[in-house]
Length: 297
Image (tube, rainbow, N blue to C red):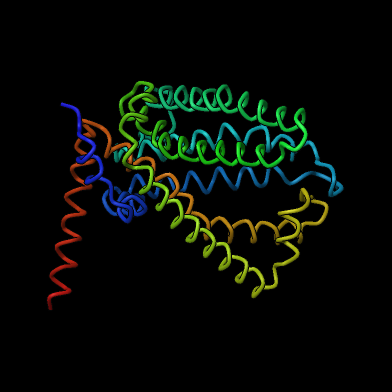
């Protein structure tokens, strides 16, 4: 039996959605910290692969840096699917926690189809609006209004389809239509979750910058953000590595929050989210009962 919109809305809680990764760490500590170690290791690999051998200019990139950018995307995609699997099921594969199975294929297909859908629908509309503004004198105001409406529509559609990849992985089948059908009532909660996530990420970024400045690592910050690093200057490379580590540590919780929101929404939408969802809900209920008992004392 399909969930009703009211049941989906009641199952989605903004705070619990943002904290899903923390609950996974509590309930599945071995899987969580194993995947954290893999995440740190692969990101370190990407960083050091990007350290060019020999001096490079700020406008160019060494061969190693170009190679790092080439391998970064599949590695980050593998990490994304591994984390989403953990958040959706409470499990990761034994050994190397990456696999290409029905969950990952379904999620990849859903992501690609969603991107194509946005391009096929939004591209021609934006092109037509721009063409109208160029061909008709005095149509600039209309052009801005049309583009503004299209941006609002795109934001609404992206929020309504935010859980498409996660729900597809959970159901092991492309679920764009189901996400659209069931995600109408979650547009505002997901939007508010995104606002809170943005504020949290901003606070983490500010703290990271303060730590970098306090420890005198500003030169490393410049090297990481504006120029490929080089082993010709080992001190600068190490300085940049420390900066990258600080940014990683402070930004890591915000990154996991960003993965938690669509995963939580997908489980709220699913008819049979599985035993992991029941375990999450039970733990949430225990936390709420504990908080109420402490407030009454």
